[in-house]
Amino acid sequence: MSTHDIERIFREEYGRAVAVLVRRFSDIDLAEEAVQDAFATAVQRWPTEGVPPSPAGWLITTARNRIIDRLRREASRDDRTQAALHHGGSLAGLPEEAVDDEIGDERLRLIFTCCHPALALNAQVALTLRLLGGLTTEAIARAFLVPAATLAQRLVRAKGKIRDARIPYRVPQAADLPARMRGVLAVIYLIFNEGYTASSGDRLTRDDLCAEAIRLGRQLHELMPGEPEVMGLLALMLLIDARRAARVSADGGLVRLADQDRRQWNRAMIREGQALVRRCLARNVPGPYQIQAAINAVHSDASTSADTDWRQILTLYNHLMAVAPTPVAALNRAVAVAEVEGPHAALTLVDSLDLDRYYLFHAIRADLLRRLGRLSEAADAYDTAIERSENAAEREFLERRLTELRQM
Amino acid sequence: MKQYLLSIYQPDGPPPADLDLTRIMRDVRALRDEMKRAGAWVFSGGLHDASTATVVRVNHGDALITDGPYTEGKEHLGGFTIIKTADLDGALDWGRKLATVLSPLAIEVRPFHDETTH
Image 1: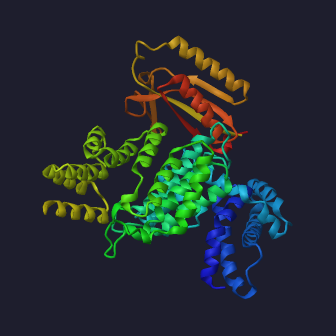
Image 2 (image 1 turned 90 degrees about the vertical axis):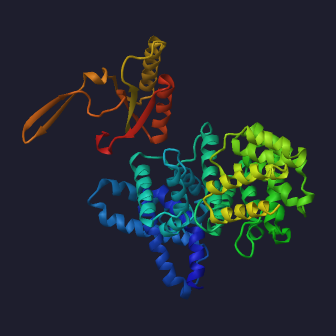
Image 3 (image 1 turned 180 degrees about the horizontal axis):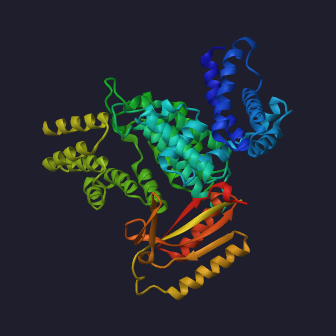
C-alpha cells in the first residue's frame, strides 16, 4: 500500500467523510480539518497495518474522534461546542462498518448546500470540487487559472455565508427540487466544460476536470438513481469525453468531429453512455441533458462521418428547441440543418441569431459561407471568430481553416 | 430559530401613476398576517421617503447633523420586515412571497447575528 494508493482512497472517500461530519457537527472547517488529520494518520498506519475493511468508516470514525477530543477540550468555554458534542456523539460506539452504512445520503445534502443558489456560481463550483471532489485549493485554482489566494478567499467567503446565513444541509423539498437539481447539474456540467474546452489559456483539455465532473455525475446518479436528467448529464459527459483522444492531433491541434479518427474513440465509455441514454429516454421525461446525450449517441453510432444520421440528429434538435430553446441550441441545430437541407437554409437560420460575441457563431457562419462559395465573406467571418476565441488551440484551428480558404 | 432582515429597496420619488397602491397595501397586510400565523413575523415597517432622512455623526464629542440619506443613489430602503425561520431556505420562501407582492421591487435577505435571537 503506497502513499499514492492511500491518496486515491482518500480522494474517493473524502466527500462522504466530510459530508457526514458536516451533518453531525454543522461546521465545514472543523469537518475538513478532522478528515485531513485522519488522512495523515492513515498515511502513517495503513502501509504497515493494512487498509481497514471500510476505509470510509475508518476515516469518519477517526475524524469524528478527533473532533470530539477537540470539542471536549474547548467544551468548558462554550455552550455551543457542548451542543455540537452532543449531536456528534450519536455516532460514538458504532463499529466502522455501521458508520459506513449510515452515510450515503449525507453527500446528497452537501451537494445541494454547495450548489445553493444563494452562493455565487464560481463559489458553487469551487465548493463542490473542494468538499465533494476532495481537490486541494491549489489544484482548483490551477484548473481555473486563478491565483490560489483568490480561490482560498472565495471558499472562505462561501463557507462563511453557509454558516452565518444558515444555508441548510438538506435535500430540497419536492416543490423546489427541479429548480435546485438544475443548479446542481449546471455546476457539474460547467466543471466538465471547463475541463473540455479551457475558456482561456493554452491547454485544450484539462483532463482532470473532465474526470472529476464525470465522477461527480456518477456520485449523483448513484444517490438519485431514478432521475432521468442526472442519467442524461452523465451519459452526455461520457459520450463527449469518449472522443478526447481523437479530438487533439499529434501536434496538439484541434480536430473537429467530422475529421476525427473514430478508431481512437473510447468504446467502453460510448457503450456506457449509450446504455444510459436508452435507460433515461425509456422513462419518457425528456430534458435538455438527455436530448443532448441522445444527439451525441447518434454521432457515436456512426463509424464514419459520412454515415452520420443527420435526420435523426435534426429531429432531436427540434425536441431540444421545444424543451429548452437557447440561441446556442439553435446554432447547433443549424449545423444539422446544413447537412439535411443544405448550407443556404442553415445560413438563413444562423443569421437570425443574436450571438455576435460567441466565436462558434462566426466559425459556423464562416464554414457555411465557404460552402456557398462566398469566400471573402467567409474569410471575414473567420477573422471575427479568431478575434472572439480565447483558446489557443481553437484559434490555431480557425487560422488553419482561414489559410486553407485563402488557397482555394 | 434564526432571524433575517428582509429589506425592500425602492426607487426614490413618487410611485408610478399606474401603480395600484391599494391592492399592494392589502397584499402586504395579508402577507404580514400569514407570517404571524406561521410564527415567523417579528417586526415590520414602511419608511417615509429617503428625502426625510437625517444623518448624525459624532466626532470628538461634537454631533454633526446633515440632511438627507446616508447613501447617495436613486434607490433607498423603503421598508423592512424581520422574520425568524429555521434556515435561509425558510427566509428565502418569505422573501419570494414579499417580492411577488411588491414585484418588480427586489428584496434583500440578510441574517442577523445569532446573539439577537432569544
